[in-house]
Image (cartoon, rainbow, N blue to C red):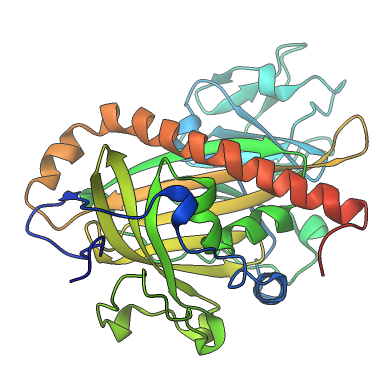
Amino acid sequence: MKPGRPRIRTAVPLVLRRGGVPWDRQRPTWRDAAPAVIARELKRAQARPSGNWYVVGASRALREDRPLACEVAGRELVVWRGPDGRPVAGPGACPHLGAPLSDSPVRCGTLVCHWHGLALNGTPFAGWNPLPVHDDGVLLWLRLDDIGGEAPLDRPALPPRPDPRRAVATVYTGSGVCDPEDIVANRLDPWHGAWLHPYSFVDLTVVGSPGGREAPEDPEAPEDPGNPEGRADPQDGGFTVDVSFKLAWRVVVPVRAVFTAPGPRTVVMRIVEGEGAGSVVETHATPLGDDERGRPRTAVTEAVIATSDRAGFTVALRAAPVLRPLMRAAAARLWRDDLAYAERRRHLRSTGRFPG
């Protein structure tokens, strides 16, 4: 095994990284991250159906006593839980005089307008019409057919997830001045990981990309561990990446992950080998509408669903209330940089200066 070679599976989940290449001496990845490659995979993602479903928040954010305000493509919307606990959604303005329903309380599953007491139980009333809504246990989705313009689906097409009884899930939400395509393009560029996020990722190598194109030989790169099953299916538009998650000092967790784009506004990273195999990170982009300067705004909602087959993972399950804020903080740190990436990409596109 070469020095610095990340071991994909070890007897203990953590590995002490020996040697390694400093940040400024790692192999440049700009040749591999060709604009044409990213643009091609972005186009393929945009051609996939969404059924007009948009992610609007985390399931945990929707309480029984108050609604959740959300916005999609400039439309004010509201979601609350009905008397049976299932979500109800519709326009965010009261049909009486336009009061913001997001500021109104929920009583016994009924949304009661705080201006004049008009009660909405989720059925049509005076021009107020409910919208299809889906709670998958982690995320909330709304179906907006007039915005999506596609053939509608009864439910959003969800990627496979770990068994919720053996997983810890958390959701990060943020927003930036960009379009959904800029968020998706960021996630379809795995080559930037160890350069833009050196505090989180080291020893990153893209070992397989769509169309069967593999990373060029590099004398400093890790040896191929030989796991053809872990490679992405070219038809899925996937990138296969060997990377080590950096925890502290030289302690890392090496894994093999596959990035795919199952829909026009979604990118999924799945760990296929190493610690936490089966864990997924789902990134969803939702258009919010224009800001006061006419610039597009997009929300990014990232669901991290972590699992492990180790017996000790039961401790993590019991500690989930403590782990979730830490997981969200880690995602927020990454998205501080990735939103800047997406915003810069959008700015260059809007000014005609984007390469390619």
